[in-house]
Length: 268
Image (cartoon, rainbow, N blue to C red):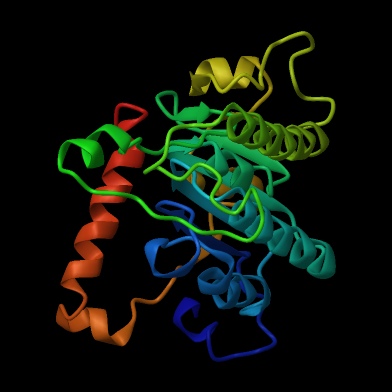
């Protein structure tokens, strides 16, 4: 009888949980596995296909673009409201910075005891190459219309006004991040705790601070909530056709190096 339930429409099926895997660095274009353009069809399928009872986000991301983090999270929240579905997040190795921003798309967040969470802050990094070009006898020539057009040019000495402007932009982004966390975790965050200083925590401490709702993994937790017969349908980005034949080796290698560097910031 169980084998026939797929084909007989009037037999009630066990609850379906749509699982969206969000793994990798968050960045626009080809550099990022996680961005709104790539994930839009994945998220749409998860919420619409098979009448799910809930959507589970399985997150393993060290972060990346704050804009893409916001766009992906907003899309998930819009569909959750439209379909009236609960959303749960499950952190694997790391949900830091933009990765934690993604987790706030969920109504409840769970993690492993050893998961790394937090890094609620903003970072910008680059190199200064002025000494190098002087040594090799290269002269830098830049012409602009607009005094700020060459802001933070790595081939020119830093200007205090540029640094001040960058920090102002970072503060605005940080403020948006803090608002997102405070809104989505309202009533759950530990009062008086300094949660927005860019620090990171393991699962147990993140639970004590209210950044997550408990320690748990996707399958047992979803079966606990929807019954032992709950079904799971996993959704994720599809690999581009050309990459299946190894024709993107150069681009993939650079992306892998950049991603490895992002995870290395958290000792992973």
